[in-house]
Image 1: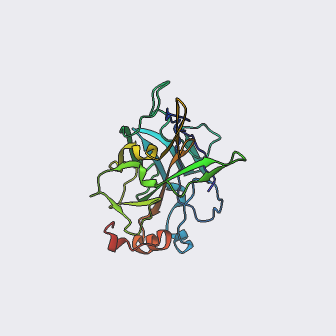
Image 2: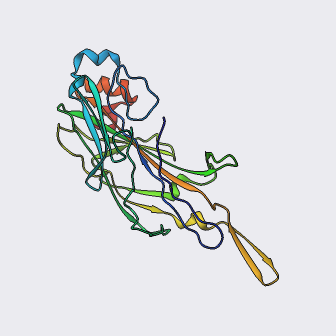
Image 3: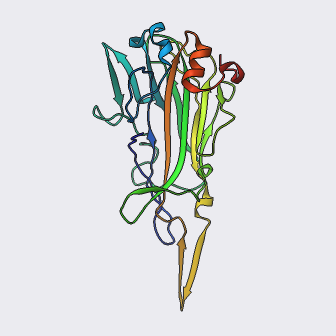
Length: 257
């Protein structure tokens, strides 16, 4: 999936600084769309005739503001993001740091995330959260770092009684299913309320002494952390089968119906 990103870097030498990276990608219902770009999700074509696609809509909210939304209106998808009219995805954490403020390790930052049904029909909602690290290679291209744990990017998940976690999650991807139907125009309870970068990211360092000069080089100088969020929805008609077809899970077993 093509995703746009903002980034936060650690500085070199003794002073470890960060310039933040994060991204919000929004996915929404569609039966015939096959793009690899952001803002899509899928449901079985078996259910195409049983719903009114023109009424579907979903939005991702951050601290009460819409990061990205995607709605079907007048036979066309309408996309709105906090990145401007030409963007297909919004950006998270744009206002997390104050002007000239540097990211502090082990500090919790305010980050309230929720979902709104911006369509005119009720729906079931899923959220996917991806956490990972990258660094630039010799060609300037971002490559994933597999030796740095995604768990060091601590997005504080809340309201576990309303957001059911997929028991088969990986360390990099967390799937959350909203419990029950999200009515048109309604907003879910928060699924996250804060973010923190664990100080362990700066714990690995090499110290070299030459005469009276001591040089400390951190193993992960120049890394970037990523938080990607995807939201998608499924119609309520024949929900058990529709959810199984779209998301590959048993909704009854998870307790989300």
